Structure formats: structure tokens, C-alpha cells
Length: 471
Image 1 (cartoon, rainbow, N blue to C red):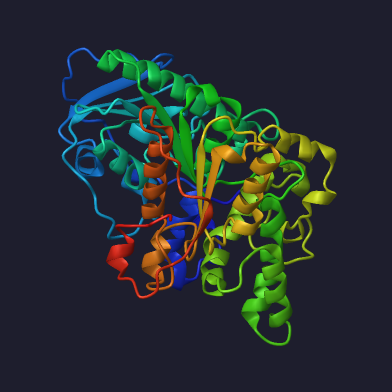
Image 2 (cartoon, helix red, strand yellow):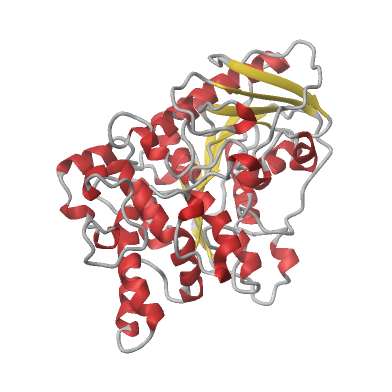
């Protein structure tokens, strides 16, 4: 398959943002952007991470990105494009950071020159509040991808934090595993593995078990939150799912709504007599009315590559000897993903999706936040569906769902389209605070009822970066 630098048709208008955006659900940053040798500051005796075959520890004056960028204990390229430009960065969190990796045979993650997957980071603040937050990563990014959106905030509140690269990274992630679906299935295993190891590491470091363990994440990492609470609720007290990806063998999945976007968007963009029909077809596929201003960017940066690499993961036979299809092919081209029809594919494809599908049978409290203007994972085809799945499974009392008016998939687009979008990062923080109250063992408090959170009209952008009231 073509590498990111060779992907055609990145128009000049979108070129720089597109490279960042593709990283969210597709390619990892180039090796030249990765941190080098980790700065080593003697910590004395450091807790061993169970199961790790390699680990390095450092005592740092600052565990948030206010300090880890300079010390080499994060990777800016890994979290680029996920948060608003002016999002405040907390500081004043000294502690211990442990970087390492578990046994694995794949080598897509080149952080620190290790050339080894199943990498993790564990951060242990000196002023610990007794809790642990674990996370996967959005898209196919690596273990530092949540540092600015999630880790900075929870570390400043005293939580220990742990994140995994999910066991494979980059646009070629689908090469991992022996059979279709294996690469994504490994993501779930790796988060379970890290959670168990991090809980033990926290207990060894502080000489006290964590009083609560919370799981959270964005996009693909939101999917992991759902899967963990369905399959390993015993490990967690609850979770926050930030617009998680939906996988279910009978649909809908992104393989249902991305092909119509690839088929119809060119006719819409071309204008003329067919533009109205194409627009209606995009609306019917799930892309909401009012989101049209986001379509050109997503056509250039997201839709095509996302469809091809995830289709390759569960249905490699569709394009024969090709790997991840033909970029930006026109409908009618042989084995073109614009013509992909999940429902018409062999039963083996549904069996691959069954390895990774969700059921809605959560076993611990879950809060979902999702933007109504998400045009990568349209809300009507993803979180709306998952909320109904939870209800049908009889687990509605364990779920709260907040549809955030004006939110889209990545908060960097708030800066690209000022005044037209609402950042979701503050809404995630409000949801996390609501979850904390919900699972508080001494003074539990029910979160607000599920609802659509209206976009306040005329509110200053700076205020939207600081608050998101869920009531």
C-alpha cells in the first residue's frame, strides 16, 4: 500500500492539517519525529511492571506535557491535531514515569528506537489521589496520543495514568495477526494486559491498591472502553467513552457509511444537476445536514484511507492481491472501495468482525460523549446505535449518553472553522467528573440524564474551552 507521503490528491489547502488528521485513525508520525533516548533521572528502586520485558524509569519534575515535551517523555507528533490549539496545559505534577513494552512479535512502533510494539507508559504522580486511569489510543497512534487530551488533566488531579499503543500502529496495522480481525482484537487484549499490570505497579509503587480504576479514550480508544466494560468489568469502576468506534457483525460499522461518502462526494463537490442527489445520498448515509462545510476536509484527509485500511483488516480478499485497495478510485473501478458493500460480502467477513464486535452488555457505569457534527463516525450510525444496544441489553441504568451539539471528531477542527464547532475536550472532562461522582463509594451521585447538550449561542470561544455543562 502507499505510504502517507505518497498518498495522492492532498490539495494544498488541506495539506498540513490532513497529515495531522490522518494520524488520528490511520498512519503514525514519521520516525524522524519520534523521541530519542529517554532522559534518565535516578529514581532509586522502581516497581517492576508485571509481564514487561523491558522498562525504563525516570523521576521527573513534571509529568504533564508542560515538561515531558522538553524531557523527551512524550511525542508531540503522536497527539498533534487532537485538541484545540489554546487548550490550557496544567503543570506542577512531579513523579515517576515508566516506559517499556510487553512481549510482541510486531515492530511498527519505533518510539525510542525500540522497534517493538506493545509499548506502554505509566505515570505515577508524587501527590497521588488513590486512583488509576488507563487508556488506549485513538486511531493507530502510539502510547502518548492521549497525553494532552486526557493525561494532563487526570495527572493534575492526582491520578496515576497508564496508556498502551494497542499492539500495532500506523497505516499498515492490518499486517499484524494471522487472520482477519486479529490486529484489532489485539487492541482489546493489550488494554486488558496493561490494566492488570498497571494496577499491580501502582500497588507496588504506593504500597496501596488503587481505590478506583477508570478507563477512558477517544475514537478507537472509546471503542476499547466499551469492550472492556462489556468483557472485563471486574477490572474497572467505570469508564468514559469519547465517540467510540462501533463494530458489530450485522452493522452498522464504518464499512457501511464510508463507501457511500466515497461514491457520492465527488458528484456533490462537482456541482451541477447531480449535486443535490449526491448531497441527499450523503445525508441518507448518516452525514448530518449542516455538516457540509466539513466534507471537503474529510474527503481529503479521512474517508478514503480509513475505509481502505479497516476494510483490509477484516476483508483482505475484496481487492485480491492489492493491499488496502486503490486510493481515490472512481466507482466502477475493479475492487474499488467506493463500491464496497459489506452486506454482500462472504460470511467469513462477518466472522472476522465477530472477533471484535460490541454487544452493549456493559457491566460497570459508562458515560458516552459524541459530537452531532462528527462526519468521520456519524453519530446516528455509531453512538446513537450503541446507546440503543445498551438499552436492549438491559444495561441502560449503567449508561449515560451526551450528544454534544456542534462537536466533531477532532478538536483541532475547532481552530480551522472558528465559530462553527464546539470543542469536545471540555465535555469529556465534565463527563469524567460526572463519572467520578457516580462511582464514589462514600457519596455517590447520579450523573445528569442522557440528553443532547445544546451549543450555547454567542458564548466566547475561550469559555467553551473551559466548560461544558451536561445538565
